[in-house]
Length: 371
Image (cartoon, rainbow, N blue to C red; front, side):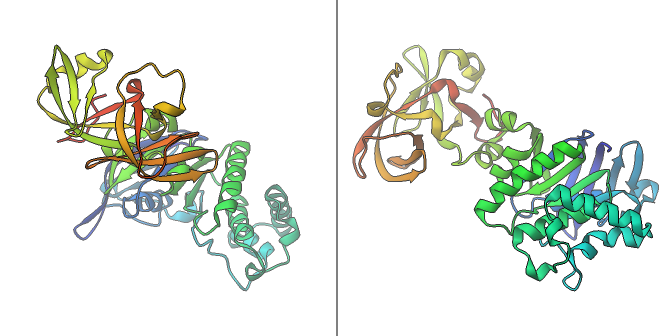
């Protein structure tokens, strides 16, 4: 097992910059996730690590070995990198049995037949596909094919696993089950794993750390908790979380010896503890963010002591298992609250409280976080 280090990596296709000046260090044995919308550069980065795409500049290190450097004319072929890649479509050979599919990379290497038999059987048992070895891919379910693809990667005993949206073709229930199995497997093997996904729930539940990308640029790197509670900018704040963070455009004003966030439809008092950090923004346009779970309906929750309720109209009420999503509006300002219960009815006005200790503040011009 090895660490993966990327230095100043850049890849451009014509005028489109897929990855720009990426610097990243992934620890030995870490489960690291590349997260972002389609076209953000996450798969291109993965392919550069695998050696399937040559970057325009920058370096890729596997442990202490430099495997890619256009500037030094160094390029190690994918076969010699000791990395294994699992693709979204599994890429299994339809005419081969499961056994042959899993054994194929070992046969290409010229491994001893007895060694191949032993390693294929051991890997199949680990992934629970021993009973499928005589079948062909067309006779398997999506989840079974996914495990076969993993087995083919694992049987090589790679130093790094590269997984490019391997769960995208599974149904919702199977995705949940498989991602748990995959995380357990990675912890058991201790192999450095890099996982690409656009699904933030998948990333948050599986990753040790996450890199959020947008338009080829790294927006933030951190643990799931850091990204959720301390987003560095508006993009990360909106991308992480389901439902996403509420954003309210406002102006910071001073009235009656205190600061207020003036959203035109209503005013929100600035908590005393963050006044020093916001004072230099008086008169500036800002964006306030607050998570749906930090909004409460006053009538249905006891013990709320804050007296800054917003009177809003309930537009839609969505039951989502153990909680409800209240879609609210006040003029042109929409909000979503996640609550356990509600007395609200569609079209009625309700009083909504904010937990002001949980608000996030962003500079509207730069989109960078202030609080």
